[in-house]
Length: 124
Image (cartoon, rainbow, N blue to C red; front, side):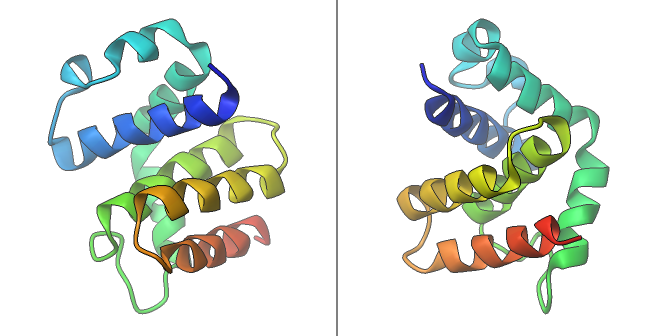
C-alpha cells in the first residue's frame, strides 16, 4: 500500500472516530491501522494532540467554526495538519494530497476551501 492510500485510510479512520461516532477499536480498517506504521502514526498523533490540532485549524477559519464545516473537510484538514506537524514531508506535498482526497470524497468546490486553509497554515 503506497503512502497516498495510507493517507486515505488514516482519513477514513479519523472520519469514523469524529465526535466519538465509533471507538478506535471498532473502526473499519482496524487491520490496516495495525499493519501499516504510517496509518498508525498519523491516527495516534491526532488522538494524542486532538485539541491542539483542532485549535490550530480553528484559528485559520474565517466566518466558520470547525463544527460548521463538513465532516469530510474537517477530517481532511485534521489528517493534513497532523501530517504537517508529525512528519518531515514537504508541506506542498501534504497540501496536494489533501486536495486530491477532498476532490474524491467531498463536494465539488470543497478542495478550494481545504487548499486555502492549509496554505494559510503553511505560511504561519
